[in-house]
Structures are given as structure tokens and as C-alpha cells.
Length: 337
Image 1 (tube, one colour):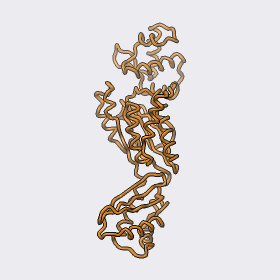
Image 2 (image 1 turned 180 degrees about the horizontal axis):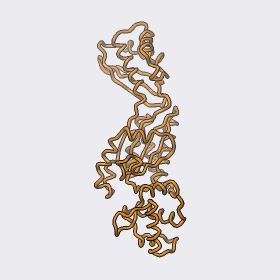
Image 3 (image 1 turned 45 degrees about the vertical axis):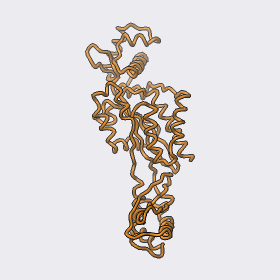
Image 4 (image 1 turned 45 degrees about the horizontal axis):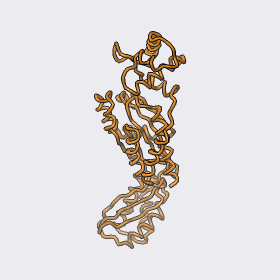
């Protein structure tokens, strides 16, 4: 789309003014803030009318000013945005939040949603990390009751997984140690799709002897391994969005989006740097919301997603670099632990 420099400047300023107030921007207000452009209000109205005809602006009411359309925001994000680097104070706040995170990537992802909502003043969503091939690097069995055993495993991405199983018979500490040795001998660094009945039978036979209770524990370990491909979604800050007046009658959109875990996981799962989804780019029924998505890295080659959710007029110039800094710091923590 071929747009003159003057139109680009007008669109950029309208985006900035609408971001601040949420109100339509009229020609008189625009002229007041366009100190680098000496033109009449009549000329500005003409340029705004042309931008409206091009689909980049819209006029909510007959006598109102203009606001950017989804297309206008997309053009702004692709061609005009000039991001503002986080201040020293903002960087310190980000670092403080990262320092308090758990070193377990799964727990860190859950804590990151709360931190992002706090830092941005908006909604936030995160996903646990996934890798090209999730495996267990170590198993440990802990007796937690007469018939209950906690099966714990550390993944190749550094996350700790656990599952509790109940056996028909009591297993001694020595028996649990034998089962643990057998698990670490046969199920370490094995992909879930390679876990067959024959392999589980081998684990049991590696113990030299086994019973139904041992088989129950081994089965629980296999189920733990099979669960590694599951992505967990954490959400926070939904109430932050209620302070935006234009979302007061769009609460249903906000609630529904935060409940759509599969959609959120899909949008956050793509590998890359920073992506922005404006309005219906999230989904046809989410025209009032936008999402800025970033990715963090973990040891072992995996990655997870983090996102800030807000109104379409959110301050992208500030949110994008802050989210990038947050992702970089989170990656450093989880890759160098």
C-alpha cells in the first residue's frame, strides 16, 4: 500500500493519541500535536478522509474524529512503529520479577503470567516449554504412605514432573530402590512413542523379580513420560482489562478468550521472536482485543510462550520492547541454571 509521508505521520499520531485516551481523534486535536507538520485543520480532515477510504481509519460517529482500524494498526505495526526501550527502572522491575522465579521451567512459566500482568497492567498468558523431543533424564521414587508412592522425573528441559500411585501391597524402601534403578536403566532418554508393552515388561524383568505393585509403579512412570507433550496454560490479570472503558461491554470476549486454552496454546506455541495479533487476527469473535506474543528458551533446546493481552489500542511501542526484554531475561535464567 502506497501512503505518502504526510499520511504516515498522521496515522502514527492518531495511533498515539488514541492509545492514550481511547477517544476518537479530531482534526483540531491532531493539529495541536502535529508540531512538525504545518497544515490547516481542513487539510487534516481531507487526509483523514482519504485514510478512511483506504481502510486505515474509521469514524465511529458522524460528528466524531477518527480511530485506527485493524488494518490501520497492522500497517502501523508492519511499517511505522518506533519502539521505546524500557527505562532503567523498568529493566530493574523486570529483573526483580525474573529473580524471584523458580528455576523449574514449568513453575517459572506459571509465575511469569503473574509477573507479566503486574508489569504490564494488562492480561497475561504463558505456556510451559516444549521441545522437539521431550524425554526423562532421571527418575526418583519416594514412599509417601504405606501404599502410596510418588513417581518423580526430571525432563531433558529441566522441568520436574510427578505422579502419585497407590499399590495393592506395601513396597519397602529397598523394593522401591530396585524399581527406581530399573526405570533409570531402561526409561531414561526414551521418547514416549517408544514406550511399548515389551519395554515395560523388560523394566520389570530387569529387577530380577517383580509383583503387581511394582508393575503399578512402572506403569505410573510410563504415564508420566506420556504426559510430557501436554502444554499447560497459565493466565493472570483478567481484571486489569476491566479498567479500559471500551471493554466494559466486551467482558464476554475477555472471559471467553482466557478460557480458550487450546487457542491460546496454539498462538503461543509458534517458534520465533515477537508476534502481534490485532483484533480478529486472534479469532473472528475477538475484535476488541489484541495480543503481543514472545518466546523464552530453556536448556535442552525447548521453548515456551508468553503473551500480553489488552485492548486493540494497547501501547505497542512500550509493550513490545518490554516483552522482548522479559523473554530475554527469562531465557537467560532458565538456560544458565
